[in-house]
Image 1 (spheres, chains in turn red, purple):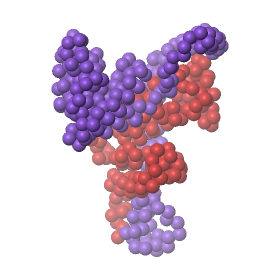
Image 2: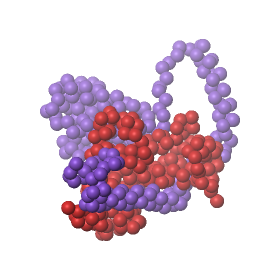
Image 3: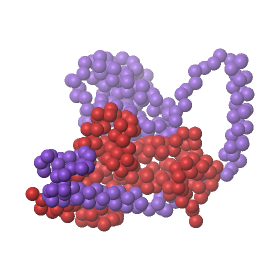
Image 4: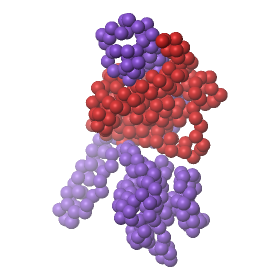
Length: 195
Length: 235
């Protein structure tokens, strides 16, 4: 039985144990990072099928390169860079095949997408609405509205001016909520009924 | 405040506390509730997404590919310490007996190559007649530094980085072509018999090793030029 990892400070200890060859620590660390890796891959790519691939490749790369990780540095940015690189690689490979647009809403005729989005219809539609945003928009929504960062901190994280972050956030929220209303029929009905 | 401005604020997430309009207007209140509901669904969707996937299968695959030598004596940290001590003594000996040579920069691992990718995309989008010859030369020189950095990081032996190295080479070649100055380091003698666009020549060499790289080239002119060299260099 692998123990759950609670505080982030445990990450360093787990990394050190994993680097020393402790397989349980490596599994616990991987399991702990898996949700973050999947979320980041989706934010980078905005395509659940590609994000599924990118998340898998990222975890494989994390395990493979963990010995090279310097435990004196923060683990999160190291992992994020790794996910970003893997996502870009997967995204680049997409250019080799014709682009296939995501279906507007569930249900779809794409088994791969159905497998990737194994969840109830409303959550699935909401996620697809999120995927319709631009990468920067997804990033700022994740940082400010989900992680609770101040826009100024998000600006630093994204390496953009504060004013740009604010206008990006403004546009991202509007685009997201517009997409949500469009893709969630129950919301659309609710909004349509209002004067 | 009218309904339109209230809804605009609701859509863009501006603070909406203590707005009497929401208490008075059922339509805007429902609009606000609908947005909250949508936000809740997204939260749920992202949560379910993050918890999904075949972790066990992926982890098993990751473990298979991991070098299985972690418990060997030569991976022991005490042995690393011993090696470092030996290396330090040797370095001191060298430093006191020979002239110091510049050492290459140590690259963090993994390296974020996104800046280089962005530069490649940016150059790719510049029309050929949008810059002067001199500016194209500058672009070629900037990208050449990226090429050298990637090459020194071992990109040729790394499947993913080889793609980026290839793309950088194709764009250096294009920039050099547009700069109209067929001289080294951008044009040089290949196989001691023919002057070539050196970075397209390099790109062709990479494409001979991995023909799928050519699929990455979207510009027909570049593809034709690199393909010409591929035929020259091919088996």
